Length: 184
Image (cartoon, rainbow, N blue to C red; front, side, top):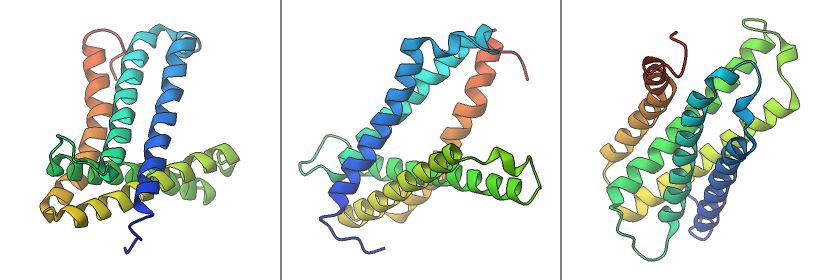
């Protein structure tokens, strides 16, 4: 992947803004009490915990995207930025590709129905594919510019989805253990 160096800072800023904008959606959920009503209202405390955790991850993603294109050095080691970039790329790419696979399954009748595919869902998946691609560009560019070891990329690619798994499995299990969510 050969990206012109002057394009990479623009990608970094755009990815950072996407992460911050998407974090803002979660903040609006909290400010408006979005989780306080509906069929899961009794679990609003648990959803709030998960929601704020997601805000932290999105803001961290924005910080990593911006750090990767910063002109002056920051006190964050290159290894941390490298692992974080590759982790964000792998996590978002896996999520988006999983969503595409689910849509294909719906389209061919393996799961759900084709009626479950709408324009909003398509735009949502395209958004994640674009942000994943942006993190991929940033990861490749940063790794090349800083001459980081390939094992850091591997650690990020393997560690990012593990972090997502912790958010989606371990945190809800912990919330269930303390009584904020029902046990599975």
